[in-house]
Image (tube, helix red, strand yellow):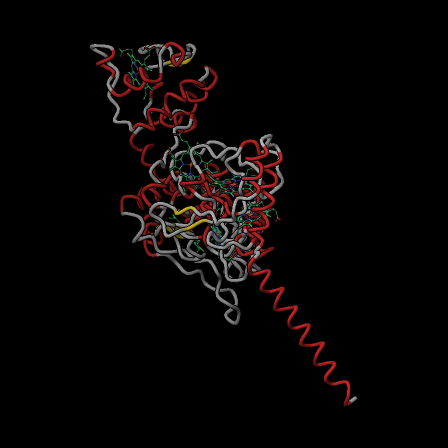
Length: 462
Ligand code: HEC
Ligand code: HEC
Ligand code: HEC
Ligand code: HEC
Ligand code: HEC
Ligand code: HEC
């Protein structure tokens, strides 16, 4: 035993030395250098000239980085993702593959993390991909990458990402604001969603939560909206886009993309169909717009929209104060507009309303926009579970006139109301009627009350 000790010691020191050398070798040869060597081999493969080939193979390893204009951000992803801008690399293995579809979002200006997440400064793969404890925004899974388009493109719709438009629409019509604040507007029963996209919530969690809130958040007071998978996906996209991160003037300079979809929206808003028709469908005061983009150049049409009377002296067409991208969007819409679409636009146009009907319609819109529908339902039917409240659910508003005068209802909306508890020994009901005094003006509240009154169902009298 005694005589063996020096031998053991010797072996151990040898082992330590080997480990130290290995560590030193690894520190000098980090993986990104290995990737760069492999990339140079790949580049050299197709190179006929042997001198150039040798030069390519001998290129020294360098860290590539992109400084994002005006943002405190450095992306080094292209240190390994070396072929993103090289179309000849379209079949190369990752991380060398060409990146299709970047359009104007060129890597040298936009970097990668702005769309993908991850940790820009890191040069080790798992650190860079953000799969480390302390990093809040790991790479978005492939199915969710396009959600980040909405972090910069906030208005209008983003071509190729209908989920964002749909998600925003659901948010504004399903009553989410009844319980959630977004940018300072909304209730406080659920968490503020202003920076939901920068929270630690995984996209998969959000999506499951939208399908069944209770399944991932036990005992959640958030109602099950019975969304379809597509709707849950759309809302998840919209949530992921809400980071409230200041993208700086350069990156948010083009917030509105001149898509045909946005042009259609403008065409409806500006009521162009009141004078124009498409393929004969619509009014005849102005010319048929079918094929107008074939008759005139984009430049001509742009001029015409800026200043109709310069193009057609004495024009009766109104002058619209449209910004460049809005005009582009309209032209893009006109290029794709069809008679069927004009029919659809015409049939959706609201009929001319009497002043009373208009007030009721405004009330209906407030009821949706300010989130009343989130608790009371789109049809005012109530029924959202509210454990330990009397009746166990949020009341229907269809019979409010049986229990209250209109003034009393106005007072409830103004001041809010906490439902009486069924069993005092149990926790208070999670949902209560919030006070809307600081959110809605008196006029808005009156309109909502008018709307409610217009739908009251009288008790059967017999
Ligand atoms: C050290 C080299 C390295 C760096 C740095 C690196 N990557 Fe990767 N990346 C890879 C490799 C290798 C793959 C291939 C798949 C794999 O091995 O995980 C990959 C795959 C990907 C994928 C495909 C999805 C996936 O997870 O397989 C995306 C997206 C990606 N990287 C984005 C980024 C972004 C964004 C950055 C910068 C924040 C970055 N990468 C930095 C090596 C790197
Ligand atoms: C404008 C946003 C945007 C930017 C900037 C961007 N990407 Fe992408 N990237 C995408 C989208 C969207 C996809 C998914 C395309 C699809 O669905 O096939 C994608 C796909 C990828 C993939 C394949 C993912 C997979 O799972 O197969 C890799 C790798 C990747 N990007 C790396 C990068 C790197 C590296 C950079 C920086 C040089 C970068 N991207 C910059 C939007 C972007
Ligand atoms: C970091 C902010 C940012 C993100 C994220 C972003 N974009 Fe953009 N996008 C811009 C800016 C800025 C421009 C204008 C670039 C230019 O013209 O130089 C632009 C331009 C565009 C255009 C072209 C508009 C035109 O004039 O034709 C389209 C389409 C577009 N983006 C779609 C997308 C899609 C799809 C995604 C997600 C995969 C995305 N963007 C992500 C900032 C962003
Ligand atoms: C009746 C009130 C109520 C309504 C209406 C409501 N929520 Fe919630 N929501 C909650 C409550 C309470 C929570 C917290 C418990 C939980 O995680 O489910 C929550 C949680 C969430 C979360 C998770 C936040 C996080 O990271 O923890 C998201 C995202 C969310 N709601 C989005 C929505 C959207 C979008 C709508 C509209 C379709 C909506 N909610 C409608 C009450 C509501
Ligand atoms: C967070 C959920 C929630 C939201 C959002 C909400 N309510 Fe309520 N509301 C309730 C609850 C719970 C009650 C029942 C109070 C009680 O039982 O005393 C109630 C009661 C009422 C009542 C009295 C009905 C009755 O039978 O007691 C009216 C009227 C009413 N709400 C209108 C509205 C209007 C209008 C809005 C939107 C501006 C709205 N509510 C938004 C939860 C909500
Ligand atoms: C008050 C009626 C009126 C409205 C509203 C109107 N226009 Fe016009 N527009 C005209 C008339 C009339 C002409 C024919 C030339 C002229 O007199 O200016 C015309 C011409 C045009 C032309 C040129 C067509 C051609 O073949 O030369 C285009 C394009 C056009 N309008 C687009 C629009 C768009 C887009 C809108 C909505 C933003 C709109 N117009 C709203 C009356 C109108």
